[in-house]
Length: 298
Ligand SMILES: [Zn+2]
Image (cartoon, rainbow, N blue to C red; front, side):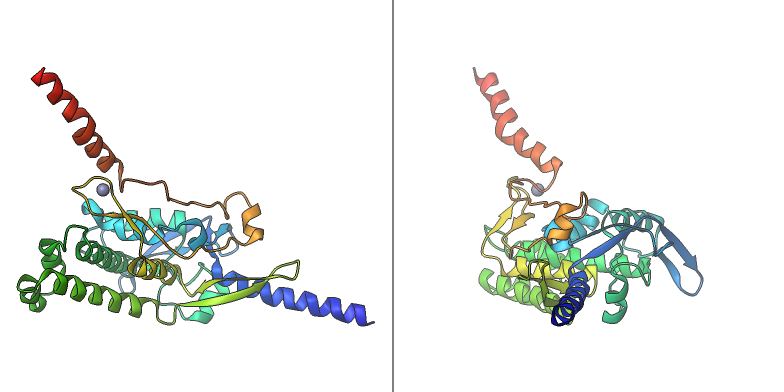
């Protein structure tokens, strides 16, 4: 009798734990579709809520997910105007790989569906991508290794603050810009990310970070970046983009580690360049050009 009771208790604890565990995962569905309408605008939604392609732990699998998101707008990747064909194509590609952003959904909705509904408006997606882009750019400009990049900061700042940037000492500019970045991060993660403890089948406990939306999960990475002591920048010296940074190690749930797609680690520690273009320029400047010059002077 007692044994049966214990078993039932363990089973129910386990199911509560599994339920909590879901808060660290996000779902990518098989079938996304676009919608558009005069009153609700354009967007992307899940066509079949039963058809989950795979679930993954964004903070475990993609330590650079925020960087990926913030760089969508690099090199004219996104239009300024929010609801364009081009932005829709970018958003759709993103959603097929990482799932909907889910920003703005209340916690209860997000907890129930983990990536399924309600759909993302294109307006929301694009403005969030631009916000992430501006924040990362501001951070990179403020913390450039050889002093703040005033020219970029002026472009990224509202008119009323431009005088302050142009007429202050480097250290003041850096601190002020970082302060602005931190304010944005704080407002993006407030209420969206929280510690979770879950129990494994062997009775031990693990902890992870739960989140209400993929967007909140990505912003915690920007929070870690702003707090990191060790940040690696692109090896191409003309580029000051961040390529990786120190962040708290997130534990993969064993259940996901076993599955073929959901639990693969994607550590990017070995990454030296932000892009193939930068790898090429670096190689060109440091290897090919000097070689050619040496040949000429011979
Ligand atoms: Zn680069």
